[in-house]
Length: 383
Ligand code: GLY
Image 1 (cartoon, protein in one colour):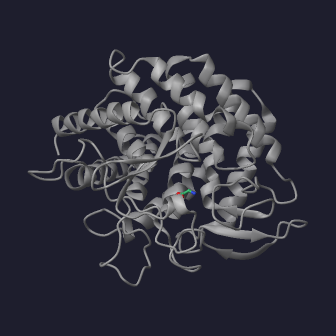
Image 2 (cartoon, protein in one colour):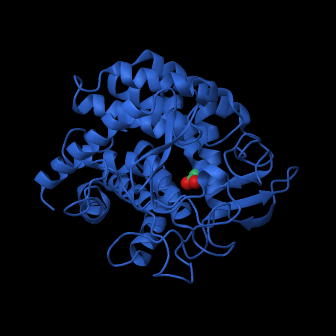
């Protein structure tokens, strides 16, 4: 795919962002039906809505007239009640939905929201466990609370490292690193695949069981479990270049993905679903993989990073050419939707999470982020 194709894809996604902004009213998008693009909304963003605010910050960078900063402010305002919730996943929304506004534009509303969420995450750290547990408000159907963990909770770390830098706060720095270390020890298997979730002894932090909230089984590799591990180890490798452990983990989990993803580079929702190839793909996990690869490429520099930059470009190409609407002549759906996202196929999930072959707002965010980088609008390593 030429850079012109990436520019055209970025423009298609901007059309979808404008359409979503105009269609979502007082809510924030969670996922949209593949057949017509109609969004399922949440009132305060759940864990996902920050991805849309992140799209609005990046859209403002791309085209400030079409996407004034007030768009991002209005969407961010809807998420503010979540800043104090007891959920490790709020690091996702408040990094991409708030810290980004501070990093890219020096925006004060965004900075204040991001710092409030980061301080609250810092207070959730449990020294007996050596990590931030999922918390009682964590957005999963079950097995949440003070002694539950998952690889998804690495979502806390991007926000914590940013806040530690912003405030010169050594406590937040130590929380981020301890959380990273322990979550990776528990969930990255010896073969470098990732199990999603775990239950811990609340007194000692000992691992009582590993399991999955959204994957096929307790011994399978759910696509986004691998995806979140890749994204946040690569992010940490990028923002903490002096810590070799994050780089080592990032290479391990990224190389596992590269070795196991289908040859067309779009992952099935779970690498071990026995129904493969007659089961769902997950373009969201795949977009996360591309975003992670760009981060690792940045962390490794021009020599070691070339393989990952190339992989990111090839992965983004597959997503754009096969899953970004319009996907063929006569496709009348809204332009710029990333179809093919699978929230989960697991029966035990929240009602709002049981969807396959949909547009997932966070999948769209990560593809758009990649396109913003691949078209040169923003340098890799900035966010
Ligand atoms: N909990 C994050 C995810 O569903 O990917």
